[in-house]
Image (cartoon, helix red, strand yellow):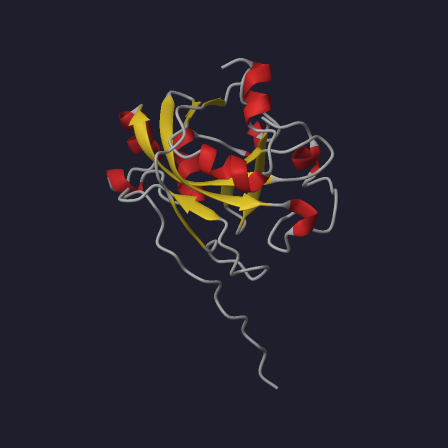
Length: 198
């Protein structure tokens, strides 16, 4: 799919684009992952989004044209990645939460040597690890860069539910996944905040 065609496919509202990514393939560094689970984030309209409070150096990529990769670091050790969607200047993105390794299995196993095959890309940090995606890939163009996204036919069916581990807008049913896929995450709500003893 060419650059213009991919951008057009990703230019719609994030809640329409997110399920369109189910079954798509992400390719990088000798490994391909078929996406089985994603989450939508709607920028300034979404307390769960990094861009809820506007443009910052961290979120600048989310305001670019659709078809870029937005990467961020979490827990001081893990990279997670998103596909930028919508229109330029308005932040929205789809977190790539989980997938199945369909090519480059030996490479993915080498990158995650203690993982079962089911868990190689089960979870957003594991997915990035299996694909060797790092913060250096932030802003990558998914049609022409080293990280490539290939869309297939829309999923015949999918399920929806709340996003995993969020405190901001935790009940919005903005997580989408392919039914019956072993790579899909187990749902967990956000852990309660611990109050300091008085």
